[in-house]
Image (cartoon, rainbow, N blue to C red; front, top):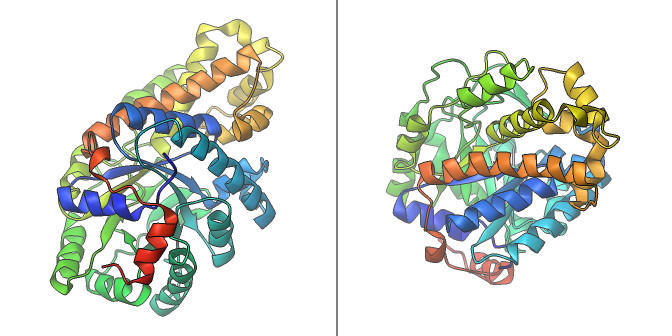
Length: 385
């Protein structure tokens, strides 16, 4: 199926009280795996690429310093891959920009094939956040592209997103934000955090989600809430990485039970990134452990050299740069590299498959209205509620 806007998925999760996982990808292999595992569970798929992930997919190994041109190239590469694999399945597939930091980055994603975007103006004052978000909504909705905003600041570090402290979302401002911007969904700050170090026994403040959703219902506003920084950081994977020579310390996530509890209170999309990074890293370390001769492989020796030198690295982009072209385009005839791609795909499917079940989206794909971007643009033009 062709890729679709996010809005129909939000309407379905809102109606039936479950959440879709939003799974971040940084390579063609990851995108392929996310789509295939969702198809297996008959769940609609949301593939997310952060603003700087587009830089990496544009060939910028130093993605923290990616230029707008890098991002444009990367957006086109990931969109091409997602469209290719989406055409092979019978489920809705969304390609969503995660944490677009400015209008030009969001525009680059939309113009190169994204069907949904997030504009993160949470670092701005409320009125400035509204102004930036409204500008993005106007450009996106004219093209049938759905929009996610953010209100409140999450602590933690992920790519270029970082803050030492959280600023919780004020539920009293949520309705005003939806009214003034026209966003389809809103990321809230309620105790989650970016990165692998969320704090042991972290408790999310689900009353913020409850109050925000009740205010929206009272005002008759359609609006889905989004949970960022929600990786569960499975301890069995962390322990396995460390047993294989890694050094991941003080890594704790949000419990699945807490995340499941908020799907009944307006949280319709839950973002996952760290869990995927950890599972891939575990698989690749395990691969080298079981196949020590591959450490000297002409194709893989540089990967192993980086992993050995950086035992605390769990983001695959930190050590897979020697095969960045394969990550960008998904094509190789090198059998050793193909085995690394298999490690990537299995890691993605392990994490995504588990959370598709836990978040309750299994089997809902046929209930989602299939709509093109052009058709969605017409609905936005008519003032969809």
